[in-house]
Length: 96
Image 1: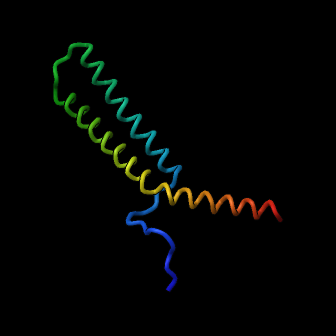
Image 2 (image 1 turned 90 degrees about the horizontal axis):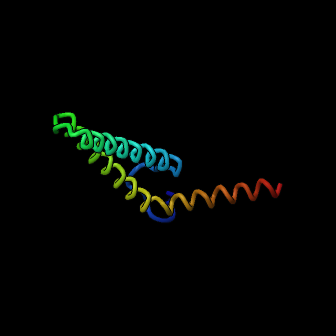
Image 3 (image 1 turned 180 degrees about the vertical axis):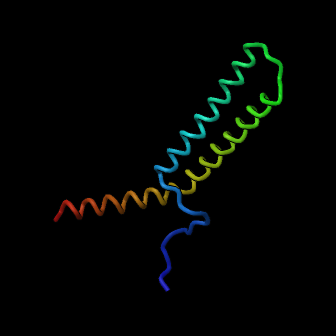
């Protein structure tokens, strides 16, 4: 059987574009929740159940961002390899 060169992935691949989209989405979610909590604090409203839910959402978003940073650290060699393959393909196409 043919064995792939290099390290094997334990999880499905995430492309660079997918990473960027998810990173922007999680960042926007965390910032929106933070702005809402700050507005509640400035308005002097007491903490209610909704405030705790906003806080929980911020923590989930920060967890998502931490996971994406983990993915970025582990998938970078695969992204670089894919870009090298695309560059080689483009170079061969131009040579024709």
